[in-house]
Image (cartoon, rainbow over the protein chains, first blue to last red):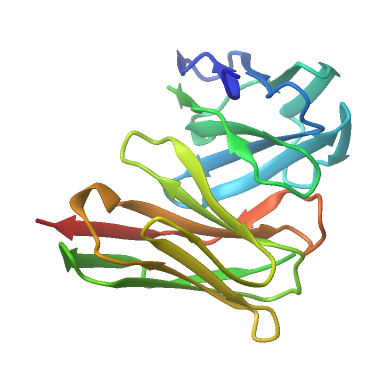
Length: 112
Length: 111
């Protein structure tokens, strides 16, 4: 298996632009997680899905952030409009229930 | 929400030394995760454990559920072990749950 796939790997955008991050989980995994990592706050959970249904989005910072999982093999995290404080590395991870989480390589986002 | 504390934050040691990283958490959990993040940024899961001890090569992880404490040990440390080690537990303690993370331990092993 190719592991968790994220795209793009790097994104540079200007404040106010829409940003879409993409994730393909490992086939057969029921859970998909979105995390954000910054120097100040470390790793934080944003939202997670079980069988394509959002279970907990309490970590989503504000209404500018939205996430979808239209099917078992694809998820998006969208920021609209983006702000400089959104600059971070965004990780997607997937797992089967109560098992090890497998992390993608991350998307490094810079908002100017 | 579970709170996670790791210590030390930074650790520099000589090759061959025995390394211990500690983690404590606030809410009872189903399992605890130890992760490794290399300078390139990728995150790899080392262990997921719910009781006792697990060993993989030179890495050993232990957990004491009653005391809400876990340790990660590295025996015969090597420069390639240099990385950030992160402890993580379920956000609300439950089984299938997002993770909340410690701030990580930056480990440098000098030759």
